[in-house]
Length: 206
Image 1 (spheres, helix red, strand yellow):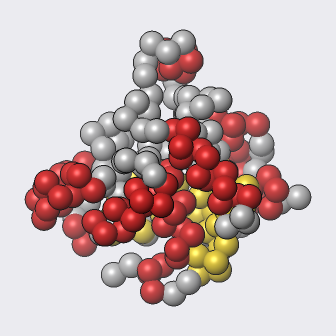
Image 2 (image 1 turned 135 degrees about the vertical axis):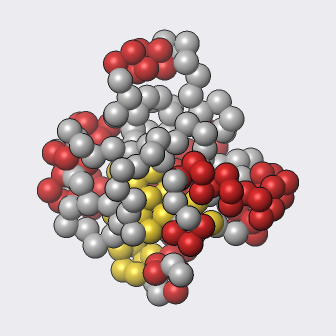
């Protein structure tokens, strides 16, 4: 069912939605990667110079603010917090299908045990989709490259937020990532980078 599950592929590049992507015109290099993953409400239109357009995996949390993607990538990986999976059980699929606008057969839901393990590894309850997909990639690929992960700390808004949304977030009027412990996630991912389990794209391309 899921192509990348069975064989450890060589390399994956995951593009986060952080505003820092606009500091680098990496679009051309990004499109050359064999497997490119993007997160939640990603968009490439108008941003190709910075983030490229190639998308092989769509990582998402099937959350209620998820925008409909006009073109669904070949692989769709869904991360639902353990507490919701325990409560909803099989019924969760109705919600995921409705929010993603695709059938159950077209996406891969990360199992409860794996999601519980991510909480244990990070020491974080309900890790973000961004952190979850990095953990998933470390398990499934030999080399994990990341780009545009700003961890809502230095830059809370996304590169494709409109001007008003950016302004509201920057001034703390519109709270973003409130359910998450971003500092703990940041520390955990920074350790993965230090241990060379994850590489930042700007370093990789040097």
